[in-house]
Image (cartoon, rainbow, N blue to C red):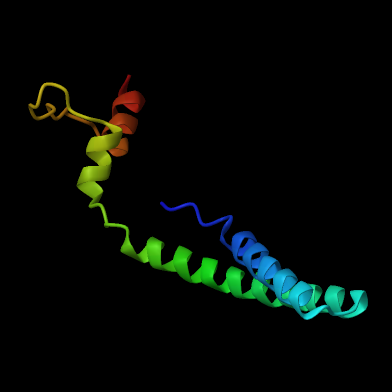
Length: 102
């Protein structure tokens, strides 16, 4: 599974860097600079979170499905490769009738 946790932060920081460079080149006042930076970071943080959610959903649906038999083999592998002998299991009715006779 892909680690998508840092995606929103990376997108927001890249947008903040671009916003800072543009604001410096334009020689804007400090209050305008800070308000632009705040708006850009919030917008791109939300966009990055949406992108992360889409990627998480996409990777979850792309995972191959594993059959129940394969899951059971992974949990309890049969080392000898032979069938397990079936035991003669008595039912509860047989057990209760035997205990009453004795």
